[in-house]
Length: 175
Image 1: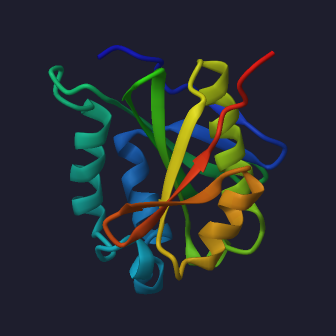
Image 2: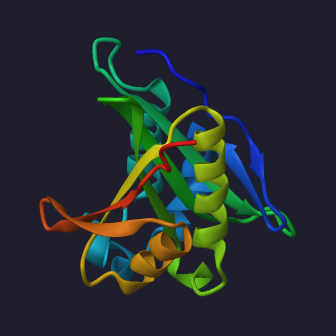
């Protein structure tokens, strides 16, 4: 499946760089807090483990998969330090393409609006590339991510993704 390729995005405070393997070392420190994984699962990875994961993500899915992966590392513009990441998995849907999105900001960088700002930039980019069906799976106890989703215009649904609630942006229809 062919789709748009992630490109650098800028906001007033952030730079979203397409994921690169060399981001792993700095991001290992950003993501190295067990509290961060309470709702997203897993555990902090070593720089070597994160490098291997990034190699896989950068390579993308196998050509026969009906999806493509868009991943950005989020950096503060003022000092160039990584604060987190945003990602979208794009798949075919009944009407066009659907993006399942996620955002993660390191514990030391939470509470400053970085997740909302970065995710909003990603969503604007997705919409500019014709992707209007946007979803996020959020654990019901993850109030911070739920707040980000609300600010982005997503709404909780009755749909479930394992133990998470699916939030959706409902595209406007009609003229």
